[in-house]
Amino acid sequence: MKTVAFYTLGCKLNFSETSTIKRQLIASGLIENSFDKGADLFIINTCSVTENANKECRRLIRKAKKISPNSRVIITGCYAQLKPESIIEIDGVDLVIGAKEKFNIFKYLNNFKKGIHGCEINNLDYFPSFSIEERSRSYVKVQDGCNYPCTYCTIPLARGKSRSDFIKNIISKIEDIGNKGAKEVVLTGVNIGDYKEPISNKNFYDLIKEIEKVDVIDRFRISSIEPNLITDEIIDFVKNSKKFVPHFHIPLQSGSDNILKSMKRRYNTSMYINRIKRIKEKIENVCIGADVIVGFPNETEEEFEKTFKLIKNLKLSYLHVFSFSERENTLATEMKGKIDKFTISKRSKRLRILSEKLKYSYYRKFSNIKKEIIVEDKNKNGYQYGFTDNYLKVRIPSSKKFTNKKIKVQLGEIKEDCIFEGNPILEDVSKY
Image 1 (cartoon, rainbow, N blue to C red):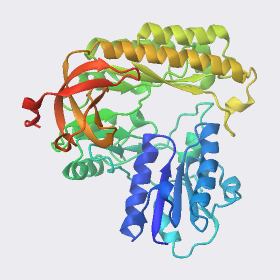
Image 2 (image 1 turned 90 degrees about the horizontal axis):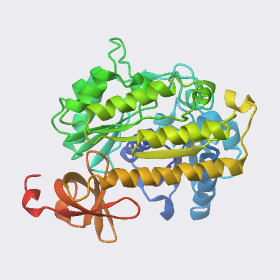
Image 3 (image 1 turned 90 degrees about the vertical axis):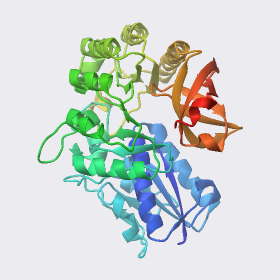
Image 4 (image 1 turned 135 degrees about the vertical axis):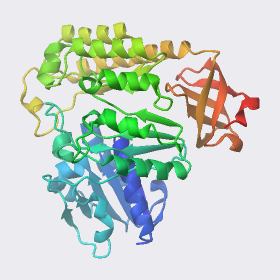
């Protein structure tokens, strides 16, 4: 085998881990190809959050074998951890690698035998991961696993118990990433607010205080964080920080206390509302997104309306809407009061429309003002793209001199898909 191709399903954490696996295999002598061009070896890093993610994995296996009939296919990630016996029976799959061995894939390549490896879930070690492919932005894992027994979620079964890296290791990785040219770091994990440094038990607040001191990175962004773990000191820290940006993604899942209790979430609507209002009071122009699950068992029309009104009244900036999907070995599968697919689809559509309205309303507040963006490498139809600190997406005319630079732009027209037209302020570009 000389060439390898990768495909990642799911979250930012999966992307950081794929990137780490990729660097290992390239260091061992393999050459990366794009998935669509084919390869001797395909590695698919899977997700288990929804049934659609499972179906997408099977589609990608078929695609890989169609492109390169003589290739080998390795499946890893959360779906691989949960259903290894089913996956190994799929035509075209050669290896299923679980959580315990996914960072040791290279050792199976010289003696390639069909089988399952590393799917023991107990006593998993922590393995650091980060991405570096997008030069402007890097995803850095600081925590893995989860101790929360939410009734709809398989992640604790797929990734094991919560565990974290040492602060000094995280700082070292971030400094290395910054020295390679990255301008922004996104802190990722399964439940990053539950960060606990081994031995010392320093928490997430202690971690971000130390990260703030790193000089070689311009911006730090906190990925999804549970509402019950956002303390006042974290909010005050972000408010006063010169590097942590005014952007939070805070899962809601439901605006009904009955449904939240059934989900075994660790907060109620009063706590959620309190956290959002506290953040908005403290941090000017903050962007706040949320996850919402539609169609959880026993979600009546009244319960759904509570969710809709709570989101509308809080004026969140955007939503990620998920249709409830039954997962094996979760308590939700045994619950009565299942919601039909038509109703779930109708409610999901209403929330997605609301999300677009909220996002457009949030964007409008920043029309015709000057903001800084970090320009990404990607060039599409003569444009490059970048994000402001508060997560406004901006496109500018493509130019090599802007790539991976922090530049100031004048925000102009808002496109229908909530992208600002940005005009670079040329006299200021040289400063960056």
